[in-house]
Length: 317
Image (cartoon, rainbow, N blue to C red; front, side, top):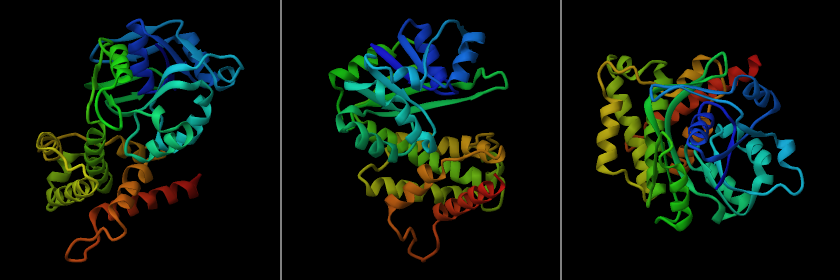
């Protein structure tokens, strides 16, 4: 199976690097500057699961990928930021053939509709990615903890032959890979958790443990989490008890240093996925998003605060 990994950043570079090290046929779609870095220093991973330096990794650029006669890839692994989705699609479109499967690892749901509109419903799988990683000043991939997992499946449910083929390729490659019969449920649950975590830590500009130590911190996290769960339930994806237990253990852990990557982006003055993670959730929840007391939802408050951040960032640019 020929696998195209779009980008060689903190997420795509990590999973693509592990796959390449395990002997899979992996090519990275990168810009020329990143291709030059990979030629000079290799693809470097620093991780509690084991460091890795890959020399002579296969790369293509958008320009070389568009050369006529290039054979389509079997699997496209897509892990870009939501605000880069359109550019990413244009960059890898030439790699997609009639039998290509696209596995996006973005948060939320909007990207599924965008990808299906461009490549057709059948081409797109559902996926969930769990990893905390970043790039350091040397452009090395730094894995921040021991979590490293990809879950994927058919959007219509079940484990098809092509999903099993993907599972065979992603399995035994140095990270946890799971084919799911109910990937939409898993995607909704991750979305609910991420929106609650990102929303609360960005609102307070603090980790979970600090928020819980404030007078109303726990109540605000609770209300935000409940609002997100209600939207999922309204779309036929009420969260499961096992998810609820795991999420509460993380969202209400006294003294926890847990934050969302969105908070790190805010503190660094970087672009954020406010529309994709929070705004789209609000849209799917309906225009009102108010409780019985007619109070403005915490979700809307968080989203408005993040939109104010984006406005100030754009003015300063």
